Length: 596
Image (cartoon, rainbow, N blue to C red; front, top):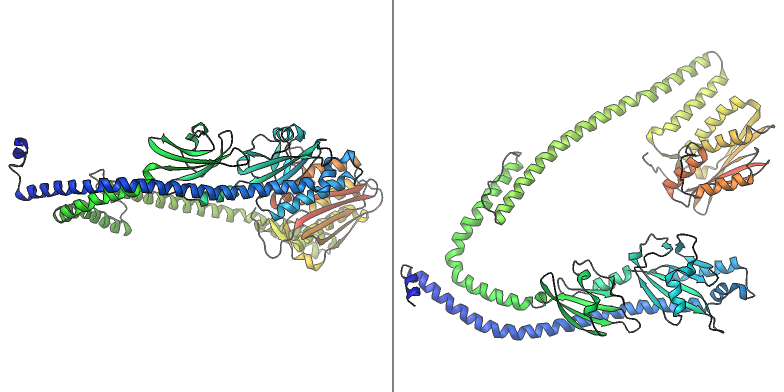
């Protein structure tokens, strides 16, 4: 008591009154809030657990619906007569195998079209035959050696689920990774003998489960995730603690567990799917579930302190510690807006105002650097534009020179030279095309016709040509210089070796929303082995540089790189009777442009 009296001896009456008032108020608030918060804490905890269980049950029910639907689809496939005949083809008097393969793939396609959540399906027979839709093997190894196939055969009466099926000899046509699919596998048995005929596999997109799980909310930082029977995570929202949760913590088919993770206590409520040993787990920090109680306690204290102290301290404190430096910072910002980028905020503290001042200084420095960088980039851009303008002088000089030769030939009545010069001028102009990579088909035809005029002057009576392009497709846009290499190939590898007169015919038409162009010649044609080798190379990824100078390969590769693997070249030929090169392109109307 004497120490307390000595402590307050030199204090003001205002200080003493405030001190006693605060102490009495705090004791009263703490006494009331302790009892109330304890009761409220228990109520909040029960409500949180009930809400978590309810959300988990909803998620589990939705996932079970999709699992049951996948199981039903597999069951319907396994009962289809075409599938049974496909799996047991050698032991049945059925349709040809290629026809059964077509029917099974078509049946798979029907289910995939109706169910957007299916990424692909595959049916594998014990004879190592398979039919798939949306899936394809990576190597030629037998699918019967895969672990999922063996497990389905070992337990043919159950559906098997594989999460994150890494290491399979399968890839999806939709470029889905193993982390993006959930595989359903079930064996197919002979309805009469019970013998296992094969296995059906369906890959379901995991984003369906993702949408279901992420739609369930457990407070601000709580979440729900799915764990398989081995304790691995099937799907979880992005969260740093999910991989610190061990499946060994959860014993039995349902319950709740409390664990500390990263020095924070979490409650985990779990339940098990009835058909298989997957668990659905709801996780949330206890601190968050009881945050309402903490908030009540916090705001009770704040209200008491604000009531007692705000009138005495807030005005002076906020005016001097916040308003003054903020006003200083605002004044600096206004000057920076006017262009005075050399100004800096004199930060003397490490609090939020000091950090804000440091951020302001960093921002002004970055703006200054960016202005300087933009200046340098604009300067380099102008220099590049000058270089481009200088480079344009070369083709202009070439055109002017060809025009001069043309007029000189006309003055001397050398009409054949005039024709060749005009054709060569057209050839160069369309080849350059002002930098365009895509030109109208009419210009492409003019380009190849100019090339043929020059070649006819060289080969005289040994070569003739015919071009039949309807006006309806002349407006279509195509990659430039795709026909000239084909015509050049026809001349040098077909007609040049022919003893009699050769003829080249160029025509085009529309087919199945595609533009088809054909270059046909009556040359010597290709040997069957060479023809097969060339057509196969058009579909393969080029692994060497041997053919990079060969026109047909270059044209085919340009088309595939620009439009995809569904387009390109195909050669039809018969030795001694000529060749026919078919070009398939997409329909592109209007003034579509592609920068080279």
